[in-house]
Structure formats: structure tokens, C-alpha cells
Amino acid sequence: MNMNVLYFCSDAFAKVAATTMTSLLENNKSFESITIYLVGDEVTETNKQFLRNIIEGKYGRKFIYIESPTPNECFEYDFKDKYQMGRTWMRLCMTRVIPESVDRVLCMDSDTLVLGDLSEMWNIDMGDNLLAGVADCVNVKAFKNHFMMEDGDIYCNAGMFLYNMDAWRKSGVEEKFKKIIQGLNGNVFFVEQTLLNSVCRGRIIKLPAEYNSYTLFYAFSYKNLIRWRKPTLFYTPEEVEVAKKNPKIIHYTNNFYMISRPWVENSEHPMAGEFRKYMKMIGWTDLDKDKRTSKQKFIHGLVHAIPQGLLAYIVNFLYNTYRPIYLSNKARKAK
Image (tube, one colour):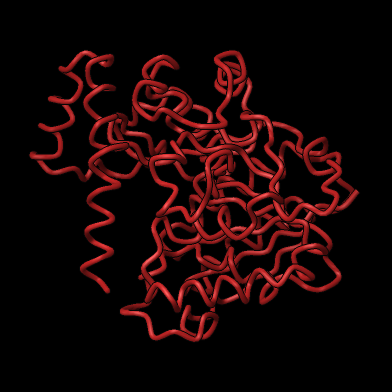
């Protein structure tokens, strides 16, 4: 059984990437072979060798580094700057980095941690579907114009997607991405996550939540999470609880309510200790400094002074009512 995994990272994120790659390799020894592709943003030779020593030297797996092309090259559009599309837009251009011989690939953010064997997920029958992922906690109805979707469509978090590359190559989706980006002048809400969900709608498999246990699961109680986000096609309380207690993949996403990055001092994430175990395995012992300003720390304390139930109602209005109106006005002005 062979597995192909794709990560993205900048040079500054090399140690974070090394940590998650170590967790993947430690917990998936049942695979006969694993090939890790890294699309890097100006990663130094020193850090490339650091990653290669772990993947090939320690674990005997294959490592392929690919320098990221520019978004201008992929989408034939003159972007305002290199990062207008963010750092992980290569998810939209998979045929540029994945060989034709590869029939499926697991694409993950570098701020993830793999805590379980992924063979069951890897071997799912994808049929003619393009992607398999974990539903994000969003209200598609509130944002459907910005998501370019309809009621009843699933919207997945792009931090972990399993790609059916055979179907992907035949579908022509990459050309559709290009046309939408050009038509919107490069201004896409939630960038590649929205395009993946919009263009691939109807051909996405919803995976159990434990394959992308993101920070929102831990920051808010289930009741208050529903109050805030009013999500569509989400998970039951029992499914979220399984994802929190026995995650296959943890995704340490940023969140206003919690200092979630486990490699940073003062992290409040309840699963920070899991990440730090793998940090030590690569020789990373010093936590990054908490670089929040005094103002940011004050706001963090103020937010926590509000009862979470009341806070959920407040941010629900801001997120699901005010934000869509603001985005619509912004889009009109940009035309």
C-alpha cells in the first residue's frame, strides 16, 4: 500500500512542517511506501536537507521538493503581489506538481498533526468524486453568493483534502479556477478553499470529523459553536466529541478565542502537548515567543470576560449578518 502526501510551507514554517511530517510517518508505518511532496516558498537548502534527513534518513521514505511557481504563471493573471492568493493556492494547480502516475494524493496544511493510521481513509472508494474532506463549520446560506454555492452544498475546510487525481485530470477544474480568478480580478473570498468547494460541488465526499479536528471544536462548546456559526451540513455533537477525543488529524487553525498555535508560548490549545511531543522528536525544544501586542492581549482578556453563550450570539450577528453585507459592498466598490 502506497501513500502520496502533499504539504506546503515557507522557510519560516520548516520546523512546523518537519513536526507534522514526523507525526505522519510515526503513525503510518503500515504503508509499504510513502512519498512526501513539499511545495516550498523559498525554503533554504539547509532546511530542505533538514527535512530530507528526517523523511529519507530516519524513516526511509521518499521526499520530493518542488519550488512553488508564481500565481501569475498558473492563473495567467497579474496579481497585486505574490501573496494576494495566500500561500496555499497550489491546491488549485495540482497537475503542475503531482506526476501523472499518481492516482490520489492527500493534501494537508503544515499546521496539522497526524495521530492515527490513515489507511482506512486513504482506501475509501472515491468513485468519480474529485475530493474528500471534512465539513467546515460555516453557514453556506449566509455566504452562498461569496462561496458561489447553493443551499445544500457541502463546504469543506481545505486544511485536509484527499484528491482523486484520475478524476481531477479529466474534469477540467483547473481551467475553471483560472477563469473565475481572472473574472474576479484575483479577489476570491477564502481564496482556494472557496474555489475548491464551489467548482467541485456535487463531487466532494464528506469524511468523519476526526480527519480534520480543527481549533473551533476545542475553543467553543458544541452548543455555542452552533449558536455562533449556524453551520449547514455539519456534524452531530457525538461526532465532534469523537473528533476532539480521538482525532486522526488535528488542525491547529488560528482562532480569535484561543491562542491555538502549539509551538508558541502560552498556547491555550488543549492538544498542544501532543504537538510538542513530536517537536522534541525533531530536536525542537524552544517555543516561539508570544508576540501579541498589549492591545491584542487586552482584547483577548476582554473577550474571555464575556460569557461564552452571550459572545456566541454577538459574533453570530457579526459573522453571519454583518460580514456578508460588508463583503457585498466591498465587491461592488471593487468593480
